[in-house]
Image (cartoon, rainbow, N blue to C red; front, side, top):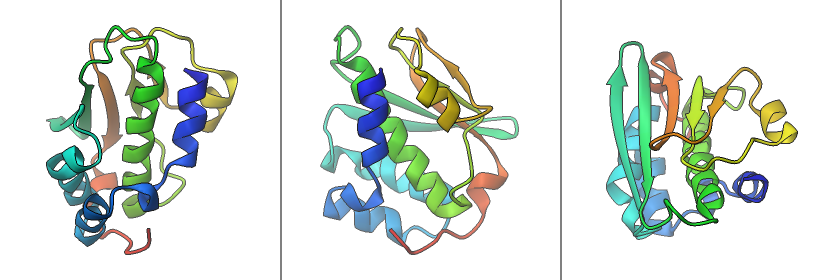
Length: 147
């Protein structure tokens, strides 16, 4: 899990496939950027599937990394996807925005660096799917064109 966390920190919007990057950057809000990611993620990675669900005041981004569920590398793959989602949300909501909750299929304990980096974010492992959860205001505002 630690290796995935470190690899995810090196990823950013600018490291996305050019077609995916353009689709995300052109979207006007945080929500529309995640929708663009969901619609075009196959250009980056055919094993990743992303869905958005509304749960009360929250939005949950559900990620599936197909074929990795029983792999020892599942934590690495999960962090790469979550790091991309976090970077996209932050491009719209600001860099200090932290998710309310992140869940992982992998069972490894998050490192101290992970827990420190995400402050009050609830991080759960051994879950049915990978999820990113954030409060509604994060998604509404206009997104930055940087990235």
